Length: 352
Image 1 (cartoon, rainbow, N blue to C red):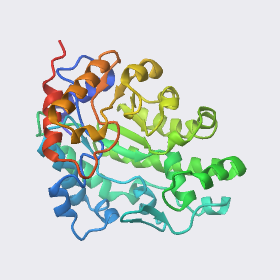
Image 2 (tube, one colour; image 1 turned 90 degrees about the vertical axis):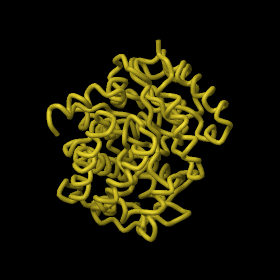
Image 3 (cartoon, one colour; image 1 turned 180 degrees about the vertical axis):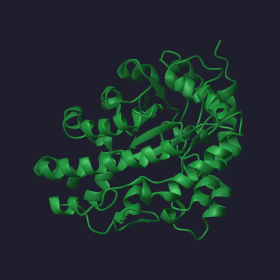
Image 4 (cartoon, rainbow, N blue to C red; image 1 turned 90 degrees about the horizontal axis):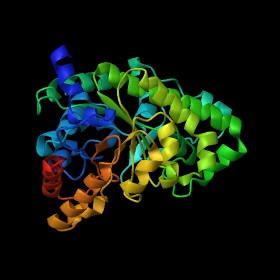
């Protein structure tokens, strides 16, 4: 990117909020803003498998840009999937419609871990091409719109590999964690390196921030998180932090882990809708927060939605910085027009 573009992005509302600086307005973007809630997404994805779309630079670019064009949000989130890096190195898996990621041969032994190849940037040419295309396009939108890179955190990716697919109880994952700590440690080190390379590749190509997404971390006690998970998330965040971009760390159902997730190396801690921001902010220390409107409130009357959004914005004033978001991803049946109204409301909400 040119220095002029870099300067414009540096002064964007999202990156300023992530650094705890004064902002012209509360920046807003939405997890899963690119996806099934958009008719244009459904059109371009028709007949194309999910992981295939995540490995096509032109499709990645188009899908990532769709919500930026529609809503004028303050950031684009790189369109990908938690298990995409595993697919890129040849792990036999697929995303089954209505089920989620399914792994053909779940991990059980040290030999299984050793069989997982390392990830290198050379295995990700479609990622580099997509990020470069996106940053070029985003430079001309709203004076420069940042791109947030994306990866799944080690615990969540490990849970798919061990369970063989989605799980509510994570019983097999915890059995491995507690019963075969040597296998668990090796697996987490392997996945942490994969996640770090995946994020480093995105940043090297032009991403201005990253989000490490730990969907299932809320299944853990604080002690188990500190002992078995936090060091590996910290490994990822430390490597990306050396590149000088803000790091967002988000998990679902993590009320009891927010401070620990921040301590793993986050500049911004994502808060899901279950924890009011006024309770979350003291937990995360001297860090910015992201969140956290209940995603179902977009189905309420507009005046109800915006009233609750105002409460979130007001609560966010107490944080070092605040990036407005939903408390989890956009629900597929969401009305895009309602998200447009929410975006406009947040960006026009007075901060004086």
